[in-house]
Image 1 (cartoon, rainbow over the protein chains, first blue to last red):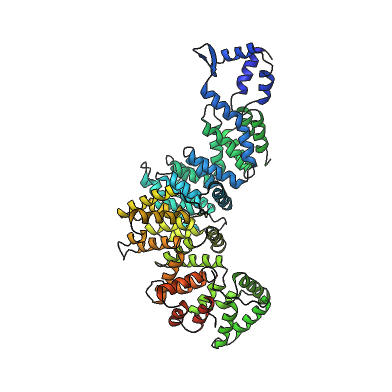
Image 2: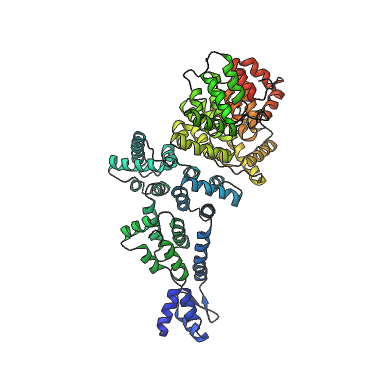
Length: 314
Length: 319
C-alpha cells in the first residue's frame, strides 16, 4: 500500500464503531518511529502540537478510542449473559447514566412479560434492591409515575381483547391529546398513564388502530413532543419500527457514546427475537440493508460479530 | 405457623374423592354430609386438596368445585369453595371479586398485595392472566380512582426485594420525608406512595422505627388525624400489613366478629387464607389482645357447618 493510502487506512481503522484490528496490526506493526511520527504530525484530528514540542494525542479522542476498542468486548459479554442479567444491568446503567429514559422505556416495553419479571428478579440478586425502588428514587420529574408503572407491569399476553373498551380508550386518548395541545402535561393525566402502562399489547394495538380511524392520525405521531409517551407507544405497538429508527440514528457519524451503545444493545437483544422483521423494516424505511449499513460504519471484530448476529433469522 | 391439622395417615385421593361424591349426592338437608365434607377437606393441605380435585375430575368428569358452587351461597359454602381453591387461585379470585364490588374491596386488594411474599404475589398475577384473560393491575387500575388507584396499583405491581439488608441513612432520610408530608397533611403525596410501594419490608420497618425515634410517635398514630377518612384508614392498614401482618389480621378478625367492620366476608377470608400460613401467630395475638381464645370468639359468633369448618381450619381439636 502506498504511504498516503496507509495513512488514510489507519485513520479509517480508528474511525467508526469498533476498530479494524487487522489493519492496525498490519500497518502500525511495521511502521518505524519516523513513520509513526509522520502519522501523528499529519493527523490533526487526533494529535495536537504540544507547546513542549511533541505531538500529543487529543484527550477526548483517547477516551473515544478506549470505547471503540472495548466495543467488541461489551458486545460479547452482553450476548453471553443470561437475558435476565442483561436486562437488569441495562436498566441499572440507564438509571445511572443520565438517566436514559429511552432505554428504560425500551427494556420495559419490548420484552415479554416473563422476561421483564426475570429482569426484576435478577435485579434483586445483582443490586440487593428492587428495580422499581431504584427507579422511583432516582427519577424526580412527572415521568416518574409512568416509568415506574412501565417497569412494574406484567401484561396479559393472550389474544383476548375488548373492542368496546379499546374504542372508548382510543376516544379518550384523542380528546386528552387535543386538550393537552402543547402544554406537555399528558404525563400527569392518570388515565393516559393507566392505559399505556397496564393494557395488554394486543389491546393497545387495537386502541392504536381505532385512534387512526377516529382521528385520521397515528397515535405516536400525535404524541410528537411528548417524549416518554411517544416512545412508550412506539415500543408497545411498533417495536421494529422503533428499533430501526434508533439504530439508524446511532449509526450516523459523530454521535455521542451513549447513542453509539444503542447499536450493540439493540442487535444483541433482538438477534434471537425479531431480527428478520427488524431487517425488513430497516430496509423498508432507509432503502439500504442493515448488513450493508453495518459494513459501512463498523470495523474489525465488532463488525464481524454484529454481522453474524444480524444474519440470524435469514 | 399454620393451624391446619392433617391426619398422620391421609387416605388416598381416590377414597377422599369417593367419600366427597357420596356426601354431595346425599340429601342436602342431612347434617352428616357437611360434617363429612369438613372432616375431609378441612384436614388436607393445599397439595393434597389439589390432588383430590384432580382425582375427582378424572373420576367423575366434573370439577369438585362445581358441586360446591350452588345457587344459595351460604357462609359455609363460600368458605368451603375458597378453602378448596389452590392458594394462588384463591387470591386471584378474591382480587377479581373485589374489583367487581364497591368500597370495602380496596381493603382486600391491599391485604393480598401487602401480606403475600413477592414471589407469591407474582404467581397470583400469573394466575389472574390465565383465569381472567387480563392483567391484575389493569383491572385494579380500571376499577379504582383517585387516591385509591394511586396507592393500590403500585401495591399490586410491586416486586419487593426480600432481603434483610437495610440502609440506615436512607431509613433516616425517608422517615423525615414521611414526617414532612404527614405534617403537611399530604397523605397521598408521591413520596409517601413511593416509599410504601417500592421499598422492601425490612427497609420500611427500619424507616418506621427511625420515624418513631426521631419524632416521638409511631407513624400510625400521626396518621389518625381524621378517623372518618377512609383513605387514611387504608394507609394505616397498608403500613400494618407490611410490618405487622399478624396484628392487622387480629384486628380484622376482631372487627368482623364484633360486627364492627364493613367487611362482611372478612372472617372467612382471613381464616381460609391464613390457616396454612400464619394462623397460629394470629391466634396468639388475638388471645393477647382480647383475653379470649379465637376458638371461643368464633364459636360465639357463628354456628353450624360454618362454625365447624372455621374451627377445624384454626386447629380446634374436636372439629
